[in-house]
Length: 196
Image 1: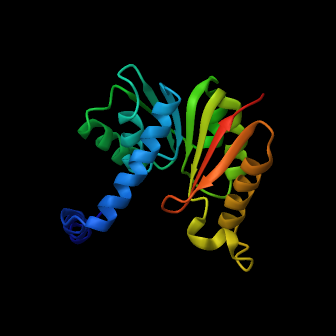
Image 2: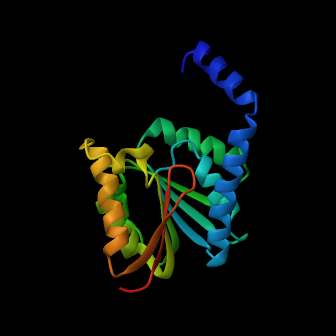
Image 3: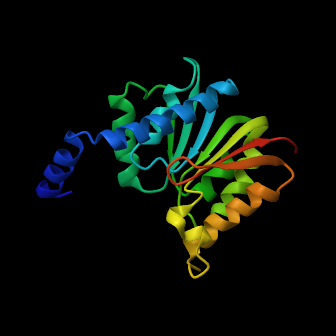
């Protein structure tokens, strides 16, 4: 990142926007309440990006809890590691670098919760792996269920919009989960694994 961009980003985040702060607080609270409601101790996150959501997830776990997060972009992984270290969570977070569809088959099942916030095109595959890796009664969460309105726009046939639509359809119809979309920010799919 060049120096001007770094300065711009620093200035942008130095001034707290009260509306965005309230939205983030509600979003974080909803996620933490959900994790605590099922007594989650192991969470899998697809898409670490810069570590923001991972910090909230890890903080919502008990002291013995563990977050496993997958990030394919090395630059994002580096930023996420830095964020986890700054939050004092590096010992409770396992960050795996690589493409999610390559990493997911290597993981042992029985996660208490899976949070999907990764690239949108392969979301149907992420759904299948998430359900396989969840324990019975585990929580399935997926961000961007509305995808900025694209999912209800019949003219948007982009691969990203189609990926979100596919995930939403699976969450609504797959008999292994009971799901709903919660209108938090850009929509959050919340599901519980009830079978298989």
